[in-house]
Image (cartoon, rainbow, N blue to C red):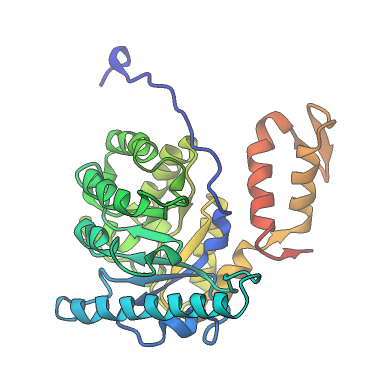
Length: 330
């Protein structure tokens, strides 16, 4: 493509998502076959979980699909029964209870469409859309629409970028605009599927390095540069080794520096490290507040750093979003 025929469509970014994307925190994936999903949702187990992904895709073998679907339907029935009992006891009290954000990851678009008939499906916060790209977007969009029709609050979606076309920058710019057209303001974040992207290259993450030392590190930089200007937030891929906490902390530091808003985790022992990494220094919050003060100067100095509201305002708003969820540290 030459400079003569470069596309010149205006970038029309999304507005802010309906909930703070930093609330995702450490997203714990649990197989839909697990018997303790309800205990995690009600915080009887793992009360530190901030977001839960009930996986019907890679975490469930073909032979267990029917059992997994039945298990999730039973979970939703129990949840709906609890809400109804609460209303029957005192209709003046809210039906919500303290719980993590809950998402379901269906295996394919057909499964997502089938879920639209399930009792209680509207109780979850939304869906993870795996392996989505321009080839599969239409199928996912039609399936999601069955949940959105007649629903005052359509479910949130978190598309996962994890297929071979994601290595093509031109494809990704088309995909960013297509996401806006397909799901409007219901995209909470885009998830980066690190392991599936590595698989596209016939690779596995090395045990001795962070993902940023692999070709996926370069790709993540490109994804940030492509999707963030359209208004999207992105989450960081999973770190699958549990015996290298220092390397995990190093990768988390890189995740935060790129502006990623959360990280997929495979084990509860990883949650605390994610929470520590996303904590915000008090001096950073002070800078953000100073930048967003209405009567501030065009350029000023604070703590030996130059602050320029015109260029730093978007960063400052993001800092305050993060500080609203995580601890502020001295």
